[in-house]
Length: 153
Image (cartoon, rainbow, N blue to C red; front, top):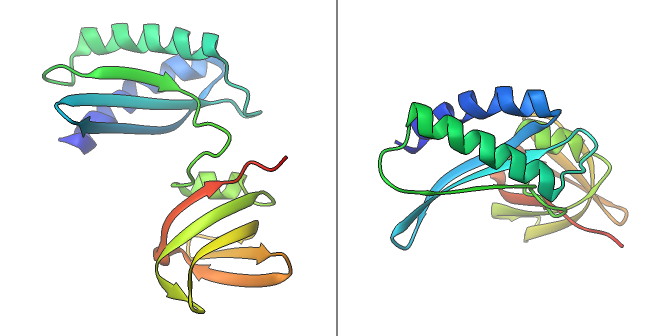
């Protein structure tokens, strides 16, 4: 059910985002306790999404969801920026993060470690290369459990 819901939501939100000069970063449809949450993360090519952007998209998407009704039952709609320490899930997320500092965990140990933090040097569909202050580590993409950008001051 969740995959079909997300596909329907993406079909509805993409034209709205295009009109607003925004893009879809990610979507989630998840149950927390007794409540369902539809989360839509939006972004701009320059990464500067503000509260007004989120409000406009939420209002327009909410109306579109009410008209097409792809979700049976109640849920909460949340529209937001993915944040500064945004998760890296899709190929496009990793590609945009090349040159940025990231934190990554793996499903199994690589060179005796499961946690890596450093600069994302290169990314392909098969391999993530991180420079950890001079130590370059190659991590197979299928071994990556979670990854996110790290906010550096």
